[in-house]
Image (tube, rainbow, N blue to C red; front, side, top):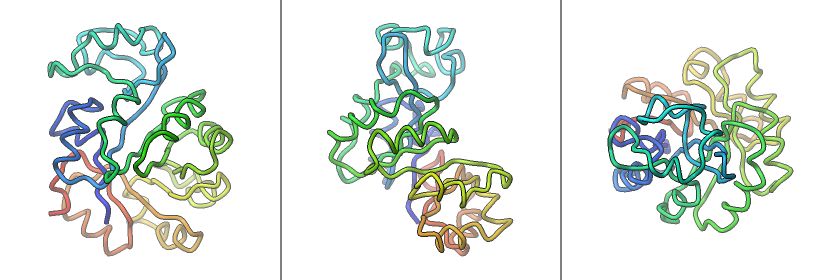
Length: 221
């Protein structure tokens, strides 16, 4: 199974920062997952939450702050700032893939342009169907992944309808159903989130899961 570093192995490094990406690369991740939003000055920045309150000493919504403002903040007291997607891609060698999660709509064209200049493998994921449709329109060559934690979202059929190459379900969905088999039959790979125990990873391997997302680098040891 491929190992995907959730926010750059968030238990081991300040999440969604350049140093987290560099740590994930050094720790042997096959893919680094990061989250993106747009800030007030227009840049696509790497940050999970809608607000900056949880991981910085600032407050308010990302969309209310300029990139300069975000660069002046420290993530989890690390001295690392909230980076742009361009800065994160610059820190990734071509040998390590990237999974860019769209946290909102209206980002696809900019993300597609940045990925077009990136040498490594890339995929774009989202819980939002509209965001994935925008990505397909912006650049249909970029592989996409449908994120979900609910059976009622019809993960495989929805991902197929969206033209996705991957399904990214919560791992429990794969343990409680034939989702992996159905996805493979539909020509899609399955990467699950977010694994915290090696025993669960081993069960998922038996189920045929293609990749696991984790906050820890040693989850497959």
